[in-house]
Image (cartoon, rainbow, N blue to C red; front, side, top):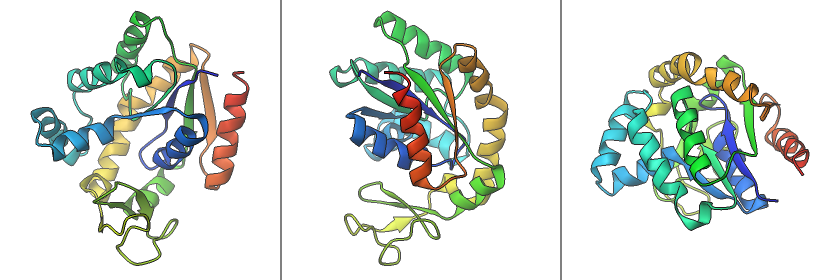
Length: 218
């Protein structure tokens, strides 16, 4: 089964953890705009520096920058058959741009998985999130603590709180989501490929429901 999935949900909905497992279980190519931006920033690339300027303020990266990054990524061979999009599109304009990119490659999305989470729960989740500086794995002070404080279980790297996980930035990101990203739900609902998932459950139950939704595509 050749799956081309878009994973949606507000900031802090657990998309990163769910996408990591989906990528492994379904052999998908993971396309994360946030990760690509941060890697470009660490390499000192101008595009990465422009993108990080938006991210540090809790704002969406400009459409022209984001669309170009995704367009180049979709042209690579490992994205021909199966992929999972995480963090893109975040506006209706980006969704339309993605449709055009895929149409040119005679392709289309298999499904849009939307994880639904309460706003207050999101704030609690994100403020407690910590990320490894070395390998990029995510943890949580309450829900997913490390064995040793401030140290990654996988590589021993130092954990830190990203600027976009600080309370003021989280609130701003949620406001932006409500205004710009949520309309995408209506966009994909109209195309009949949207599948809503209750994100207030445990990680395992959320993943089970996602898998059940994907099984209906076979």
